[in-house]
Length: 296
Image 1 (cartoon, one colour):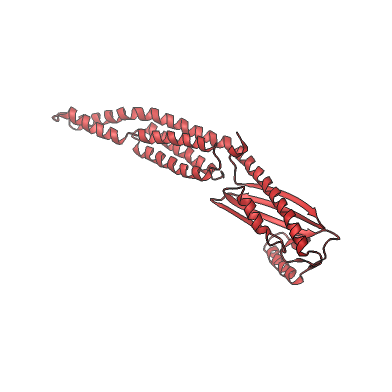
Image 2 (tube, helix red, strand yellow):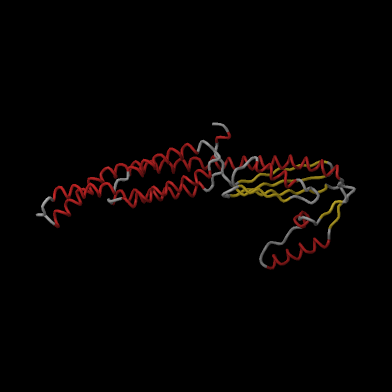
């Protein structure tokens, strides 16, 4: 099975670092579950195109999830001349003070200096040519961080695969149990109705024919073969989708179909054993649905 045929999760982390031309930078990429793909990037001042490049790189790798990129870049010692915007720093310090009073941990000096707008590079240290060069190299580091995130998400997918497969196997087994119980349900409905009619009107003319017709109608209402056929087809589809990623959205829809058939099975059940199987089936489908929320 190729790497592209392995399902991925939607939770992960990746990091990459770089340095050059008197600067150092770091890129952190995180992702969590999301119905659609949402890529956001926080970039340092002076590198305006990085956000667009980062979003494009994320969109080329992922199909679902909320992806957040944080890019830090600063001059190294002896690099570009930098200054501190005291007004901006004062505002951050005041906000931090309010958060500390509310119970948050106090900020570090390193953390404050990385906030947008606190440090400003002198134009003699970061001219347009250097900025363009740095941006190209930082963009390569963004790609590396996203590749690390992709590997992290695939690792989660590898851990999810046996869980999903086990739940699908559980559902398949319950469908087989339901087929056995459903085969006995028709006779149980007919016998139950016959006994009831015999108790209520034992001497009624044409009783045998009436019992046959009414029992046949009840048996038709209790017939769950179509639901079981569709459930079996859904099991096959689920197995196939696990080999055709990204399949998260399709699996989401399939879970709705699974639950619809399981609900109908329970509503048509005329025996306690079949009802018990139907309830177990609904519980297994719900467990599978919860796990599917983690699939890209």
